[in-house]
Image (cartoon, rainbow, N blue to C red; front, top):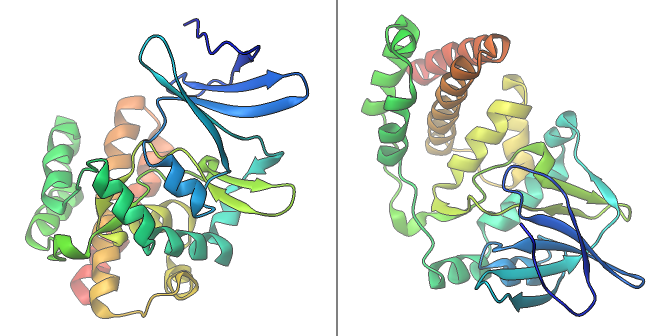
Amino acid sequence: MALDISDGWSLYPLGGNTGTAYMGTKASQKVFLKQNASPFLAALSMEGITPRLVWTKRLASGDVMTAQEWLNGRTLHREEMREQRVARLLHRVHHSHLLHDMLLKVGGRFTTPAQLLTRLQPALAADLRRHPLIQSAFAALQAEQPQLPKTHYEVCHGDLNHKNWLLSDRRRLYLVDWDAATFADPAYDLGALLCEYVPLEEWQRWLQDYGEKITADLTARVNWYARIHCLTVIADSYHQQRFQIMNQHLILLEKLTRESVTD
């Protein structure tokens, strides 16, 4: 789609799932441009969680284009997600009053355990719904839904893929791509990240790095959201015929389900 932001800027698409990200250049200037970025980008910039916001412009089409500082760097490798700096930045996100107030102001949605279960059930193919482990895991998830009050929900990123973590050449870590941001139990983010990137035997250590007191309640909530994440990946992998990934998550799901029973 042709975009006209005038003022002499040249746009170069950066790919991605949404096709709304560009590199913008003008003379010696270079910025990261995003069409219709998350409306609380300014708060993320002020907190130093995303690269600095340079300007915002409304286009003739009614779309909004935001420009952020262009940083040379790279995305994190999978194994780097186990590091303390990742845990600490996520803790800052979850405990930022500014982010909480801004997301509330722009009408941020809430994500509850019941909503996740409702979305998950139709996503599971018939063959998967007949799988004994999945049947027992789903029943356990329904019976063990975390009861954290919504007043304790925090801003969650919702898509903590390692490619959404940017490490600048100056070794500054940022978390980008906030399109899936939501109010939720912080364990929603924690369970998904741990499930994907941290060996099970290191979960307690990583949660200590995160900076939260390890309690039986926190451990149970993280386990619950990790199981939801496993089932979501299993459902997606089955449809995509990525059976190695599906089997890896089935193995982890079995371990997490067993842990939830023994805790």
